[in-house]
Image (cartoon, rainbow, N blue to C red; front, side, top):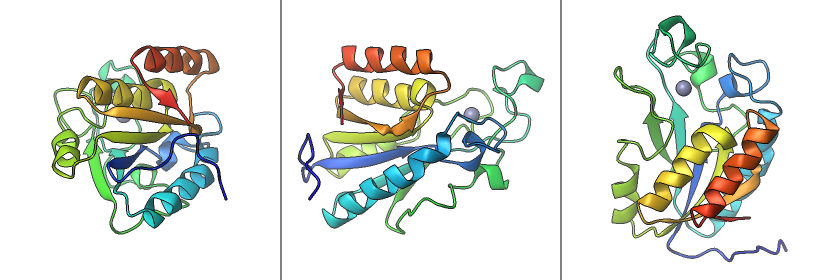
Length: 188
Ligand SMILES: [Zn+2]
């Protein structure tokens, strides 16, 4: 029996951020050891499914030549281009059919690091009476951080599943955790 530092509640939700092949080794924007989150996240998916708690999964889903790409003057190499294998959900992820898919990064005029950034996820979760979200995924210091900080701003309690996340850089990961903790997030 796994001892959880925080017991699951009926008003919880699980949010898996951008676990996609392009963010894993071999992808076009690989996060070091990004693929190692897959078995960890799968174990959490089972726990949440057993408890009947909703599961959300976000995906970065860019149009070709997105403004976040270097070719367009953005900060990142081209990644997660719509309908390419690198933009699919990671094939090892055991996402249930009941999971809610959040698509972000598809706007032509701005990037969306946070899964709550004009995606409708916040109001959807509120309608389902979710008050606290558990977050895991990629990358800890980019989209996970943005998602968690926006969740806090929207009034959700947030728990970061640290071993279910990987940062772009170790230093960035440390700073991201500090920022999230300062915003009232806790870790599991
Ligand atoms: Zn992106």
